[in-house]
Length: 87
Image (cartoon, rainbow, N blue to C red; front, side, top):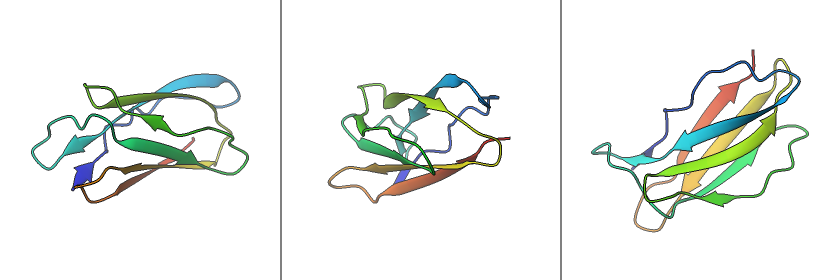
């Protein structure tokens, strides 16, 4: 299983912010090459692949109350989903 609960909670209301997602396995080791997709109302962001360090960076513009969903998939691992709510 992949985990991805390492999203940094920053204020991103109204302006673009770099959001770094780290994908790790059940032993907390980085997962390289996982495809991470971002979805949320009004967001137009393509998927990114994680680096050797297991990270993928997205530039996102958040609005208060917006829920942003990150979904990571890679063959051989269970998919992982993390939902981030903009404050």
